[in-house]
Structures are given as structure tokens and as C-alpha cells.
Length: 338
Image 1 (cartoon, helix red, strand yellow):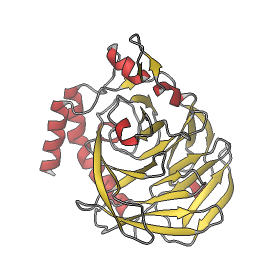
Image 2 (cartoon, one colour):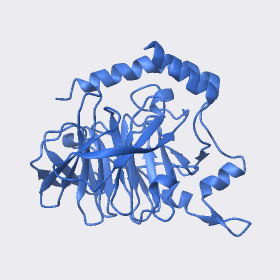
Image 3 (tube, one colour):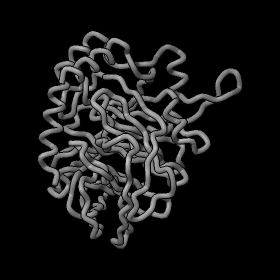
């Protein structure tokens, strides 16, 4: 515990994390998830007409098909019994990919991606980390369909992993660490833990239909990155645009619709599904004065309007208090797992 607190203080003093441009659009409530089957909504994708959702955990490979008034229109069930599903992606051929990667206690020897077709057929693809177990709640596919996993870390350092070869069923296929994303605390309120921690843990990811924008989310904010020439990994080196998602009970789901709308959802029955119209356009390349191009996020940072979140000293105090809270929270969540 002492080591965790010390690390948190050092992180606050050094101000780790890239400059971030805050966005102006605000999230608007689209509807409320009244269906009790959606009580632990954790992953989301959209085809523009429907939303497709998965719950945290589960005993079947299940995707709920939702209309845009949050009603369950259909349920797609596959026979594979997962350990702890945390996110959802969809490949160009319509296959759903369930990220069975949750590991609060960091004890799993393998994690898995479960493919689920529209007619309920599943395959499990086991994966192994090169450096021990990780708790991972975010999955995103690049333009070619390669999966990337981003770990959940209370100090905002999300490590990025991808398979070293085409994933096999049942596997396992080895993963390799290919990068990191460092986030800093914000003052956006919400989530199940102190925002000093909740605003930096990555709880979900998404990409848009043409693979030009990738989004990460925490319990309180979304971060949008421009993807150039299909280089998803390179996108995380760019300056992101931050879109606050305040007052979500436990925000873990995020999607990008074909028209660029960002969709956000939280665990808990009675929680709203929210939309941010035109979010993807916030990082669309724009010409600069020299005739080149830069993302809108980079332009904002260059003009001095970047927003890196909380000031250093308050962040230290919040972090010291919050570490114990998030560890207790993770412990309680782990009790629900098999």
C-alpha cells in the first residue's frame, strides 16, 4: 500500500501525461436503460441503426441488440462461458468480439477474445501476456482487424498489447507490449471512486467505422485520437481531445457511430445512454497555415488552450485518499467473479 501511495505522489509531482485539449460539445441523454438485463453494461458498439451491448462478467457469450430508445430488441447468445467480459468490438464482417479480459485479482494465466456471430456461433481465442497478469477493460480493433488491449491502472498508465501473430482458436497466442497511454487526473465528477483515480483508469475503447478515429474512456471522460493511414498505435502519440462525461455512475461503455457521434453508457439499471454529436470531427485533420495538416486537438494545444486536468497539489491529496478506495472497490468487484 505504501508503495502505491508513493507512486501516486510522484506521478502528481511530475505531472505525467500529454497535453490534452478539452472539447466544447456536451453529452446529451438519449434514453435510459430500464431493462434489468443491462445492469452491468460494460461494452458497446453501434452500426448507426442499433446499439450492441455486453454486460460485465456473465456466464454466456451474450450481446444485447438495443434500439435507440434503450429497449432490448434481440439477444444474441453463444455457448462459450466467459470468465469476465469487459468490452466489445465489431469487425468489418459483422463478427462481435467480446473481451474476456477482466482480472481484478491479476491471477489469470490466460485471457481471451471470444468471437460471436449474428447466429450465435462462438470461438474462443486465448491470449497470454509476456509480463504477467493484467486487468484489462478496453478492446479496440484497427482498420485491418488487429485487436489491441489497454490495461486498467489506477495511476493512468494504460499499457497497450497486441497479438504477435494471427490469433488462433483455442490458442493461446502470445501478446506483446507495444506502447502506453498516460492520462492525468481531471476535475470531471462521477464514477464509483474518487475522480482523481476514476478519471485516469481506462474502462473502454472504440474506433469509428472507417478507422480514422479511436476513443478511450475513463469513468469520467472520453479521449479522442486521430488515426492516420491506419496506424492505430501511432494515434496514441498524438494530442487527444478530451470530452467530459460527468456524473455517470460507473461509465465503462463507449462507441463511435458511423456519422461520428460518440455514445457513452454506464453500469446500473436506470442509467442514461448519452450521445455527443459530431465528436469524431473534433480530431479530423485540418490544414494549417504552412499548408500541412494537424488534428484539431493539436491545434488547440499549440494555441495554449490545452487542459491537463487538476493542478498538481490537489491531485496529490486526492490520489492519496483515493488509492485505498479504488483498491477496496476492486476487491469488492472481484468477489462477484468466479
